[in-house]
Amino acid sequence: MERKYPTKMFWFFVLTNFMFHFFYLSVPGIILCIVGIWVKSCLWIGLAVLGLDVILSIVDQLRIRKVAVAHSDNQEFNELMDTFCSSGGFEAFGKILDEKIKSSPTIESQEEEI
Image (cartoon, rainbow, N blue to C red; front, side, top):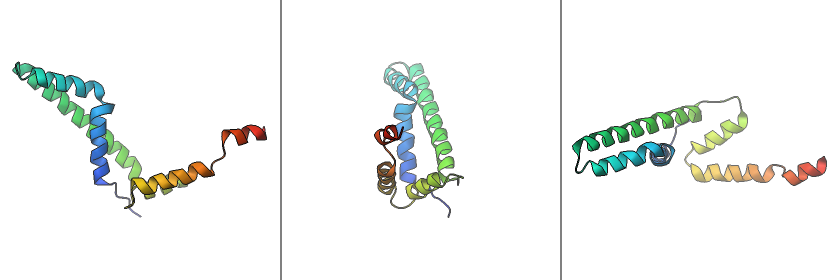
């Protein structure tokens, strides 16, 4: 089965990468653009920094997308990615993760065995 990465999630994650992952690029870029209202060179530098931030965010998300749609030798990973890339998306993915968490042994039970 060919996986299709959800488009809305792709752009949502690009936006979160833009704002939070590359925080040290977005904040100075925004500040320079605000200062650029009065000083044109700051505007151009700020726009260049924000452009670099957008490019890095898209490249980073493309790498994540490539890993998500590729098939792995790990069956659990394949099951999770098939669920994530299906029409259910986050909700179905969350349900699968909840089931896996509930079925995994707790630390207390592992300590009792020792």
